[in-house]
Length: 186
Image 1: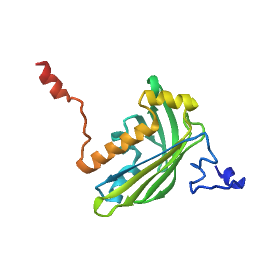
Image 2: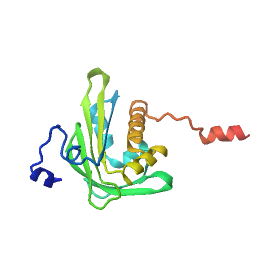
Image 3: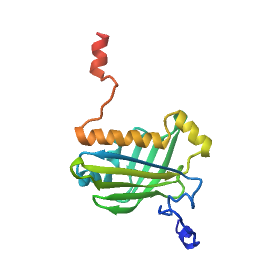
Image 4: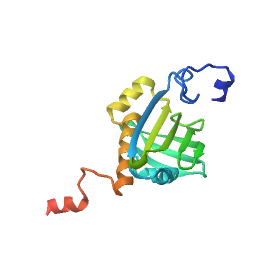
């Protein structure tokens, strides 16, 4: 990515080089925002431990901590497949922002940022911005969308679950519990 800066590429937008459409026109970009009625520091603390994200990210199969700034992610892909990559935290501003980028050699090159901004009496505005190289290009992205595994769909749902968990302590679901199932069978 530094080579993009060194090459003297001029940017008309204010996006970082890692997400600039002018530099990486083949990358898919997404940004989703949610307001959560909790303090920014509390939300940041939850997010800073990647293993917590297993509770709110439905498509994550596993997150293995490597060290304080690196983790290995395994994600469910369409048609029963899986993809994985190593994620490296590249910027960490406690209570405000976490920025990451995938290490070379992963199945899906990606980078992103999660921001936590004070919203006064309403809590905190949480904004996730992600850039990724869709496996299989545009066709792969379309197939992922059909299987409800497209990152924009997943990110929107994940942020909604994050909001529910942080505001209420649980994630609402329409699924029956085992107790309900057993009672129906009796």
